[in-house]
Image (cartoon, rainbow, N blue to C red; front, side, top):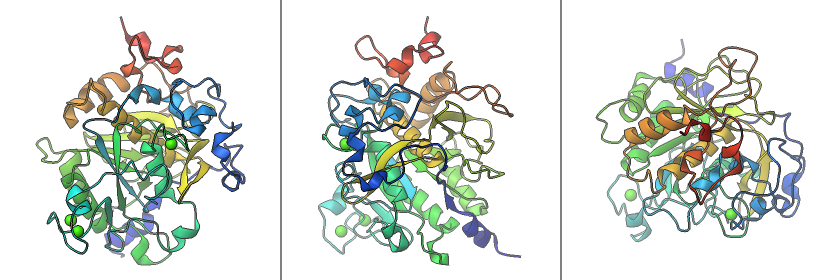
Length: 406
Ligand SMILES: [Ca+2]
Ligand SMILES: [Ca+2]
Ligand SMILES: [Ca+2]
C-alpha cells in the first residue's frame, strides 16, 4: 500500500475552472486592456453604474468588477490604507509579485527588506524571505516556475482577487484592496514530477511560517484528498485549538468539478474554517459543487471574474471555485481591517461578524435542486459595513442583510 503522504501528493489540485459559464473568455487576454472595456459576462448585476464613484481602476469603471459589487466590496474600501492591515497568506503555485496591480499590495518582512542579502536578518530560519517563501524549491523567489511560466498564473490571479491595488487607475480592484496585505507562499509547482506536488510536510511548514509571521487569514484555492496525522495536527493548532498562540482563519475552497468529497482543508470540521461555496452566473450554486460539511459556509462568485494573470500587466477572465475562495478571503480581510472590527481577535471576528452577521443573512443563493442546498446558501457580502453615508445597491435588494435590522 502506498504511504499516506504519497497518496496525498497525487490528490493535490488547484480548484480550477468551470468551462461553460463565461462568454467573454476567448482570447480575452490577447486584447490590449480588454479589462477596461465593458465585457458581456455576468448577468447577475447591471454592469453600470458602479457603487463607488471615486474608484478609478479601469475594470471597475467599465463595470467589469460586478463580483466586487455582488459582495458589496466597496463598503470595505476607505480613504486610506488600513492602519492594521490583515495579512492574507496565499497558499498556491506562486505569484508574479512585480505585476502592476500586486507590487504595492504585498506583505513585507521589514527586517529582510532592510537587511543583508544572503543573511537571515530576522532569524526565522528563512534567508531573504521578503514577501513570502517558495516551499517547493526552498527559495525566497515566490514567482511561478517551470511549466507555470508559460501559463496563466493561478496564484497571481488569486492574489489579485484578494487584494489588487485600488485607485491606481489600472486593472482591477478587490474587496481587500485597502485592508489586506498579501503573503505569497508557493506550496505547489506545476511540472509533472513528484517534487512539484504539494506534500503534507511542506504544507505544514507553510502553515507554521504564515501564522508565525502574522498572517490572520490563510487562503486555500487548492485542495487535497488525503492527509497525515502531522498535517491534521498542524491545522488543528491554528484552526481549532482554543488557546492557540497563532489562531488564524482558514478560508477553504469547495471544489465544483464533481468531486465526491470536498477534500482538505474544507473537510476539517474546525472552528476557524470558513468555506467558499461557488456561485455561478445564474445566482445558484455552481453545478458540480461538492457537498460541504456544515459550518461557516458562504457563497461567493465563481464565474466571469477578471484578475491579474501574468507579469507585468496582463489580466484574464476566469471561472471556478478558486475565484470564490480568493474573493471571500479578500472580503473578510477588508471587513476585518475596517474601523468597527479592526480590533477584534480572530475568535471575536468569527463569532460576531462571520457567524453573528454574515452566516445569518437573509440574502441567499437561489434555491437548488439537491440536498443539502435546497434552500441555497447565505451569500457573502460586506453589507454589515453600511452606514448612512456609504451604501451599496446589493444591500438594499430583497433578501438582503438590511432586512435583519430593526
Ligand atoms: Ca528571514
Ligand atoms: Ca536578508
Ligand atoms: Ca488596480
